Length: 111
Length: 114
Figure (tube, rainbow over the protein chains, first blue to last red):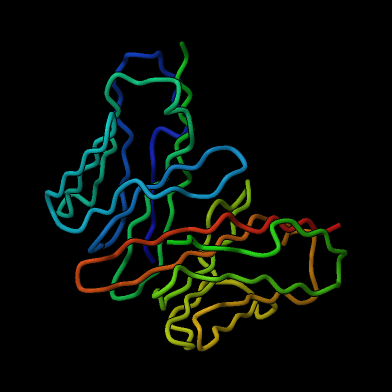
């Protein structure tokens, strides 16, 4: 059974700083998703990473995937308050289409 | 292009009742997945339907069931509601073409069981 560990679970940072969220998973996965969730809202798709070494960037967020290490990272550059949200990683294991979510990282960016 | 729609958005039910939630995927998407989100258990996979067939199922009791219609719309049903079923229920719509693996989530149905 695929298990997902995200850390940190809580992250409070100042505007302008950089930080990285880590997502480790336990078994082989052929793709991995990152989502953002604002309080009381649904999940917004950020990235889909499809292969080893994949790197995707959108604005101040950059995601990468290392399938050999079973690790994905979400790097935040020069954080701004609007990035405050909960971020989830979700690898897909085996030949099925089920997303297994981490517990999420609650990011708070303070002015 | 319209997004994923879910109805109703909010629902209050009493223990022992049953409930049916609906999800309409993005036009052209044939896969619909359902997830339950609670503060304690986080986001958990319920089941996935593709072309009217259940393709995957999560570890939920038989009280949770679903189906998909020929137009790809999906419903999930929870019978004999328990307090612990209070949650945000999200459905996700996917195309799964040769180069597309996006899963788009609907706004969710917030179910409260009293």
